[in-house]
Length: 332
Image (tube, rainbow, N blue to C red; front, side):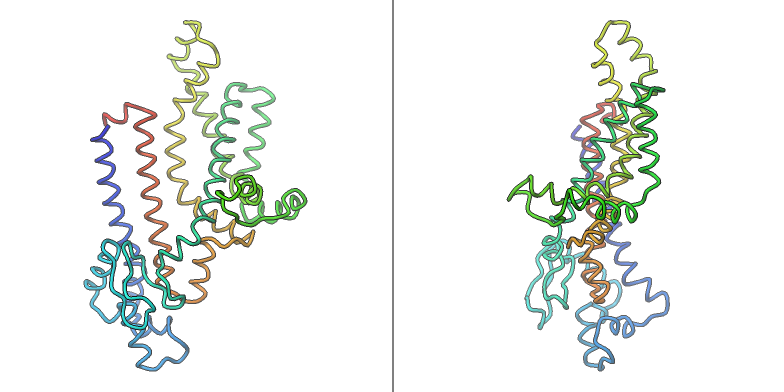
C-alpha cells in the first residue's frame, strides 16, 4: 500500500506542476501570443489613461517587465519558498505558498482565499454529504426493489433532478422555502453546528439535487449488476442474511461511485460559486467575481491556481481511499 500511495503522490506532484504551468500560460502567455503587449496588459490593471510611470510601476508589480522564463521561475519560486514584495506593497514578504499579492486589497491572495474558504467549503461539503448519502441510499433501494413502486418513484425523482439546473432550483427554493429557512447566512460550524446547518440547508439542497440524480442512477445500475453476479448467488446459497448480501453488493459499487465523485469535485466548486451568487454568500466565488470586476489579476490567477491544486489534492485523497476500499488496486 505504501508503494501505491508513493506512486500516486508523485503523480499528484507532477499534476500540480502541470496545473501551475497551464495557469501561468493562460494568464501570461496566451494574451502575448494574441498580439497584446506588456503595456496593454498592464494598462488593464492601472487607472484610466495611466502615465508611463504608472505603467512601469504596474508592470514591475506584476512581473511583466521581466522575460517569460524569469517570470515563470519567480512564479514557481513564490509557490515553494515565497517572495519578497516591492516597496509600496504594504508588506515586505509573501510567505509560501504565495499565490500572489493583491495590490488593490493590499493583502496576500492566499490570505484572501483562506478568509473566504470556510463559506465555500461549507456549501460544497454539506451538499456533497447530502447528495452522496441520499443518492447512494436511494440507488440501493431502487436496485433492491427493481421494477417495484419505490424503484419507479426514485427513477422519476432522479430524472427531475437531472432536468433542473442550479440556476432554476436556487431561486425557486429561495422563493418557496423561505418560510421554512428564512435566514441563509454563514455562521461558523464551531460556534453552533445546528445553526450552521440550518442557515446553509437551502444552498445544499440547491446544489445537491442534480448530483443526487446522477448518484442514484449510478448506484442503482452498479448494484443491479452486482446483485446478478456469481458471488451474490453463492452468498444466497450459503444462507447469508439478505442485509449482508445487499451490503456486499453495495461495496462492489463503491469504487465506481468514488471515481465519479473525484471527477465531480471540480464541478462542485463551480456549483458552490453559483450557490454563493444566488444566496448572496461571500465565498471564493464572490472573491473571484470581485477580482474580475476590479481587474485584480493576482487574485484571479491565485483563485484559479488554488482551485486547480485543490482538485489534484482531492483526487489523491480519493485514490488513497480506493486502496482502503479495494485491496486489489494496491497491486496495480
